[in-house]
Length: 173
Length: 244
Ligand SMILES: Nc1ncnc2c1ncn2[C@@H]1O[C@H](COP(=O)(O)OP(=O)(O)OP(=O)(O)O)[C@@H](O)[C@H]1O
Ligand SMILES: [Mg+2]
Image (cartoon, rainbow over all chains, first blue to last red; front, side, top):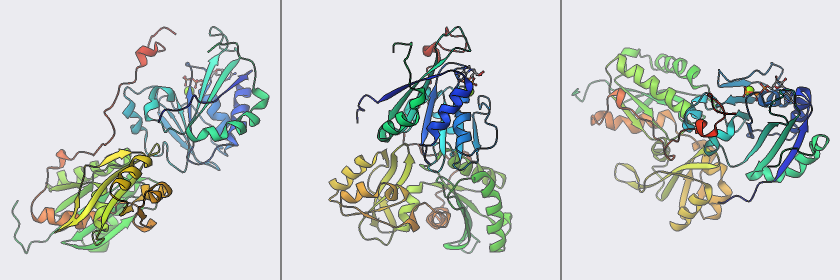
């Protein structure tokens, strides 16, 4: 089934705490089985985003980058599974990250998820983080959120929950 | 490997290709012990203790086991591989024959008394299912077409093409019940939603008796999804030294 062009919401974050705060606001819309795919350069703030969302989902353990461990599970009000495909060579290697990834009773966050799109479920939220100035690690981040599949039904609620961060984008995409 | 008819036949069965893992021991066609793990998945931690439990319940020791049956999917990748590796290790260490069976076949075996078309359908995640169709035949259920992977719409279309007179068994049927029922299918209840090691053992025993067995190392998981692709990191030009 060809997908209609997915709806997009663009946000602006002024710092790591701001990224965590907007991710926490978004987390109020997350349900078991949800999949959030994160993309963006090294250091764009993918892990930072997951930290904010996980904390809002009741995870008390500190969320760290799974870049070397590839996947980590956290207990919370909703269980959180945080994966990173950066070290993988083949799409199917994602299955090596274990069966908790994409399970129906957890929320899955996957860093570099755009690299393994063909493995992802059609119902997903894609979050892309961009540095407003690629030369400056402390630059504002521009976040593009794209709703795919059944996530489309949540686009309006997303826009409402994230209204404080909706801002003009400096990047033409 | 010829065994006389009177020899002991004690089959260890391991099924961990779905969120519900199980282990069973069957003495010929009688299941003498079984253990299963309720849905969420910790196969690795479960299989060893479950095996011990089954042996104790059966009053048997590891040395009494004469063959190993294992579910080879399609299913959850990690659970599947843990199950196969466990079966291989156990069998290789004792030079035992193995039998690998599809979870779809094992589910169908449960419905072997249903005198109509049976479709076994397992949730494949990513809004897809694994499925196969079966009919009663002398000596058991016979698969009537190659197993497939696809979405509920595709399965519903196949069911409709079969005239809709079909019983759908498995967690895929439960998850996508509305779409499948609209195509005319009847849905089995949640009791039969996942392949079970006790059924696997019973289905495998005749193969051991007929010596239709394999070497442990030849076991392969069943993948139904399309061939693997490389991740195009280089083309993305992002990392591994690529231009930013
Ligand atoms: N607005 C912002 N949002 C998020 N992080 C920011 C922001 N501004 C600066 N930073 C800094 O950018 C870095 C983001 O690191 P983080 O580990 O989250 O990135 P990542 O995208 O997960 O990288 P990797 O690809 O290595 O996993 C942190 O050092 C953080 O302090
Ligand atoms: Mg990271």
